Image (cartoon, rainbow, N blue to C red):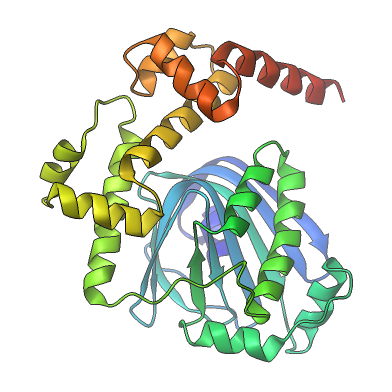
Length: 312
């Protein structure tokens, strides 16, 4: 079970920030930002809990008992239904940040009661939810939808306890939307063998780019490194992540720059270099296009918000 990943007594180790947040009877959340070393094997799955992991940063690889592999990355949501058995897990970058929500359902008819209280009394079609998840071996990774993008944008300014409670609320909404076949939250299609290989290759490309934001990355260099033609790389990456590779790289460069502006004392020139820009002016144009603020304005605003939270 995923909660084991946050329990050093289970055979792994962790260091960093970890906070358990009780939400209501039957629902709890963990907000964490930790360096993780995982046990070689995971305990048997509990039959009575939904597990939903909102990944803010880092990556997680899981292997299910049925032989299926799952790959979770930043701004993606992992859903495991009761009884979904995991046998192995790894954190490729060594660090993972996010929120984990556990919904205990000791009896089948308890889920609508628990979630209905979080959703103002809306009814939940438990049978349809179970049917959809059963067809996918009890699991799903949600990415690139308007719903997931809205969730992670809303999480960014929140504090740890607020994040945990917000994710618990969004978990209720997630299960409700899946039970109604809502077009707001389509489940990605199952990929055949060759497509799975391409998806994993694109994840490796993505991980490499995010680990080397300071480097002058090009399509040709990436294609040569991962033994794929430049045309195939561009096409496969767009299919996997919904936008061109170059655009994806620019988005993550300015996003990382925003983190450094908020959290570090590096100069703007140093930050520009750290995210792959040759000049501060070039960086400033790209940053303002994304955040409608200059880097200096963004830093002042971030520091003011931090001071305001400390005074409260």
